[in-house]
Length: 150
Image: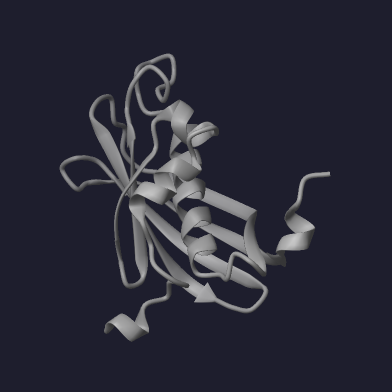
């Protein structure tokens, strides 16, 4: 892809994306945005006491939190933030390999970027590049005015 083929609305700044999650689950579980390309966004999650299940393996719910976070933020980065935002409608995940230490990395790529919906695929891998989880999320694109908390 050339620069003009990028899916992003404006400039993607990883530091700004990380600040966005400072007072949310992102910070609590340690999600960090680490890289991006013309049509993908990557984040990582530590496998530690915050993200494992009682048997010491990465909790499936933590994988889903990572998948939804990276895809939701990616979806928002494709939109004009003064007009639209993206909210999750449905997510699924297949957990394929256990991880008990280190970091996992999630890469979100769009399958469909439509006017009212977006579909993203997320691949989560371990530090050796082995597939840990594959997930897909459907996002609704809504006007900012509808997104304000009641």
